Image (tube, rainbow, N blue to C red):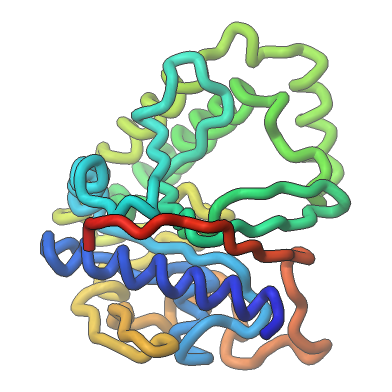
Length: 281
């Protein structure tokens, strides 16, 4: 078995634990981004994919953060930005759910990182009605996100391929060192409050703002609900009501894999440290 497929199977085990928690607590969730594409096009992982992204309606996301504190098997742990140190700079938005049963070493353009196998979980939030309000809100969110990133400028991956303009802004930010006067946790909190301005339950348009796809993620809520169950590897996951529209906005011609053939995101190596089994689910 190759490392990539081994990693996917470990990710699948994390998905199963996550599903158990959601089922026991009646929480809704949806695969998003590449995980959704894999669900619809491959009935499992995209053959070259090495991560999992999940979206949850905001209220269910907040409930999950509380539930995880006391309801995880001993071989698992999680990371939630609200619970990090006040002066922390390595904050990531959303919830990251880890398994201690396996570690992955990934090579990002010559830079190696090692961490426990994990999946990312993000809130799905509402957007305002009306074109003008929508544009103003977009601008507000982009400004808040930009300031938040400036607050942790020294931890931004400069080895990741980025557009020239973005690389220039990052370099300027590192010279100005605004991170010394901007508290990262405070700015994440401001962005988080702004994202909750329009409740998911009453919104007509919803999406995952923190995604790499930003406003391409914003779709009519009818694209998500009602969900139906669909095969993903050896389990079933909730498939949005209209995944075709979501995927079209994200990827364009999503139905056909790239002609040049599958490309793994990063060279990876997976390890299986010894982990004592514990209770939980």
